[in-house]
Image (cartoon, rainbow, N blue to C red):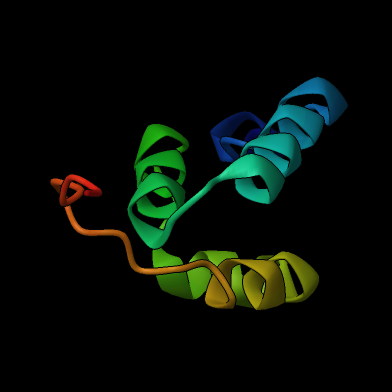
Length: 70
């Protein structure tokens, strides 16, 4: 039971919220923010969630400041 207590995604509710956050991240920066929020390394994410890792890999790189459109 200690392993489950130390797992940041131990509960179904947290896991579902995590998956939703990854699926709706609009950029790699937002994706990295989700990982940081859940205290999960990129390596642990890739190993634990291979299907979500494919989704995250396809996210666009968005610069910190979007250039204004003319």
